[in-house]
Image (cartoon, rainbow, N blue to C red; front, side, top):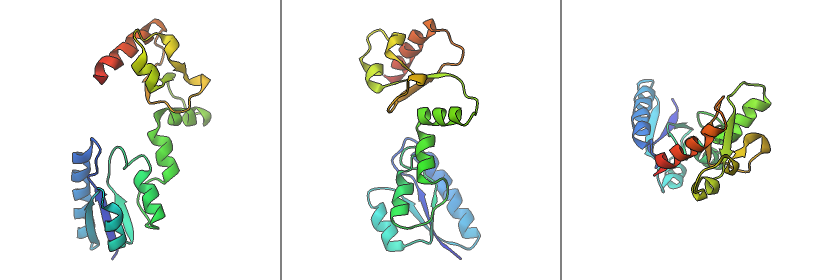
Length: 168
């Protein structure tokens, strides 16, 4: 059978979920007869993977690093096959604004939205709609997005205010 590294844990806010799902994956793979090496992802990941040389990595990480293409790119550099989406798909899916643009470009219906930079989000004292960048105008990298749907323009100010309160 295969030698499988189960990558779990990590440093995201979803660490506990990742540890639990990784443990379940480990149990299932062992029941199927695979040699499993669980790895709680941290600063020594490269050394652990280089030393063990697994035949494949099962990515059970959640959130940042596990879903944004970071670990996937590392695995590609180390020439270790892995489960899940490839690097570019992870990057596109984890960037919500980029994903919305890709869906629109492909003709997939998605609600209207506004994207605004972190600077506009944090520096505004009143949060007027002029500080937001309409998605149709393009954006280099949006850090926040708000689903807008059919909300009228006067509600945008309340949305930004609510986001500020939630971010405290």
